[in-house]
Length: 223
Ligand SMILES: O=C(CO)[C@H](O)[C@H](O)COP(=O)(O)O
Ligand SMILES: [Fe+2]
Image 1: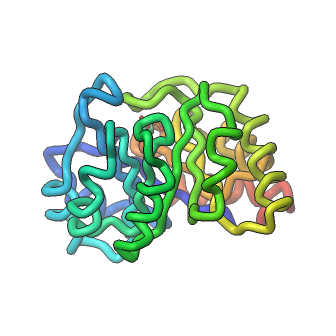
Image 2 (image 1 turned 45 degrees about the vertical axis):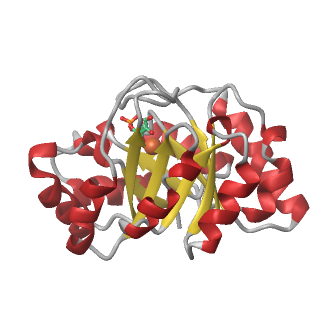
C-alpha cells in the first residue's frame, strides 16, 4: 500500500501543531519536514527547534528532508529533535557515504535525495546504506511547483536497480504530487508520495488521503 507523507511546508505555520495533529487523524503515514538553509536552496524554512516542539503531538514517522549544504554539520541536532528518517541531498555534501553512515550511527533511517538534474549513477555506490531514496519531482526550495514528467523514467530505473541489487529501500517522490501525478509515480515504482500544496488545499484531508489510495489501488497493482 502506498504511503502518504504530507509536507508541512504547506501547513499554516501559525497553527503548525494543529495541522500535524489533524494530518495524523486524517490517516497519513509520515510527516514530511522540509528543512531549508537559504544556501543549498533559495529559501529558509525551519530548524530543529521547530520540529522538536511539535514532536510530542504525534507518533507518526518524522521524515526529515534536509535541503542544507554540508548536512553532516546538523545530523546530531536533527536526530535529537526527533527525526525518524533523515534524508540528505547527494548534491549537498562531498561526503555522502560518511553522512549516511552518521545517520545510521545515530540510530535513524538514512535517506538520500536526488535533484531532477542528478543522475542515478551518483548514488549507485551508496545505495546499500539507504533506507529511503527520495526522487525530487520539482526543483527543491518551494512548494506548489509543477511536476517534472521526466522524473517517471528515473523512478522506473531506480526500481529496476533495487531489484537487481536485492535491496529494500523505499522510493519516495516529492514535488507537484496530486492524484494524477501520484498515480503515475506509484505505477512507476514509488512507495511514498509527499504531497504539500495539493493535499493541504483539500477541505477534507482524511477523504483526500483515502482518495490518493483509491486512485492508486484501483489499478490493482499496488494494494
Ligand atoms: O521538498 C519540497 C520543496 O523543496 C516539498 O516537500 C515539496 O515541494 C512539496 O510541496 P508540493 O507538494 O506543494 O510540491
Ligand atoms: Fe520535501
